[in-house]
Image 1: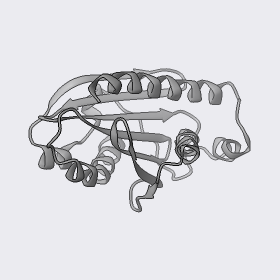
Image 2: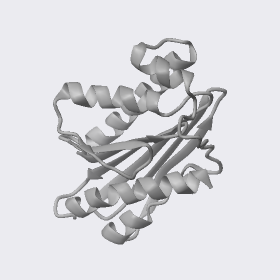
Image 3: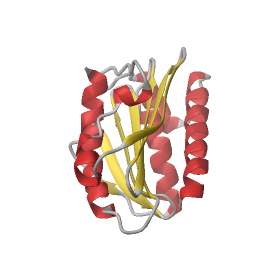
Image 4: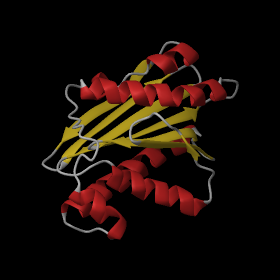
Length: 189
């Protein structure tokens, strides 16, 4: 799984940047037009700052998987929004948290795009109430457990990549909602 994780992360980042670009240029279908016309539908505006991992709270994951080290982090800001990337290494896992904050629109635009891709792929989606405005989890056959969520102007994605067998995959998957909720709270300030 390790060799696929980097490529999948790159593909995910490029896909998100493409969605942001299409939105900024006015390209949308009927499902995103409504979201674009009601920016920040939940009334919350997220604006990350500092280093990438400064915007992420993995306390719940640390409680399950133990100590972590920052493997990769970044914060990119532009006129259309911000992108946070925080990858942490654990004993047998890498956990990656990515956020997209969109100026003048809400995170539902990106969330709906990724949800549509997963629905078309036939993977089983599980709704996660109480995390942001909407959230779901699924298990990617290559990378492992994933959570996708949105609230206000932010889209959030968390992936758990098992690097070596024998780790607590179920525990890590169960910690995803708590990491998402804490990260929303941390960026909201």
